[in-house]
Length: 344
Image (cartoon, rainbow, N blue to C red; front, side, top):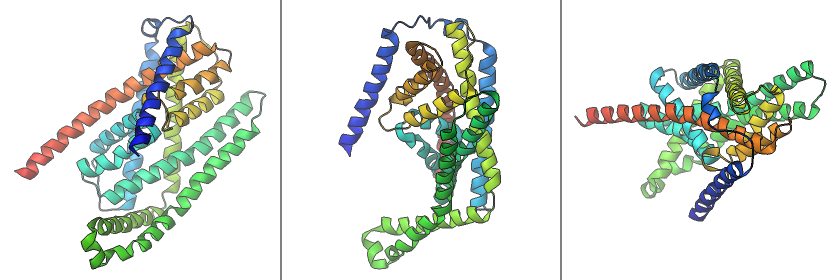
């Protein structure tokens, strides 16, 4: 296990190092100082506004999920927003999206929400993020079909597959946890738990998680969750599209038509690649490769495409890490204050 971690870490350094070497060794004709001197501030304000809207809606969705899993829990919206901001930062920072696990950890340890509701809202949020990709891709293909001549039938099929996988996950989630709960009932035997207390705790947690999933299913909030998830996705890719447009305008000094469908598809592919365990540090590496290749297909030079993708990625990460670090610091402060009160 330790060997795998070292390998992934080494490969991450290698991927990021190769990216930086490629960007700064290939003649691209771009001047990085233009990223500051020619950047249109309108795009910066628009990006921040959309980022704030997306953060608000994602927090609202988590709060809706927690309320549906247990009517007795009322999570302060401000603290939940801080946890969500940290989650947004760490999802991008750590490979394979393991940073998302910071959400249930912080929500349980700092805010004090029961672990079963933390895990159920985290799982449902992940599944609805996946489900929303299907309709979003379908809408993008429909829009592109109405405005341009090409048709992409395979993208319709991909949209259906993504939607089906998400719905199947949602359908069988409660059944799986129910079977795990039945399977772990034997661990409540006093003889067993005397030797392995962790088994009893795990059996209790599985039972509570299963009850939380049951409450979510009975709450009948599928359509509100799907609507919120779809809007969150639209906001996310819209702000990335805006940032890419701003970076192209600043570094190339001209406006280039970016087909919305192809850029969205490139961003989806880049996001998936950055989620791999072997991706570069903070996602730098495969992200730029796929998005750069997408822009190369639109007529931009490969070296320029990768450089533009890197510049956009850096700017978005600066926003994520600045807000996420501030949120994490404030959560740590709240945790210290509460810990002192408990001691006193």
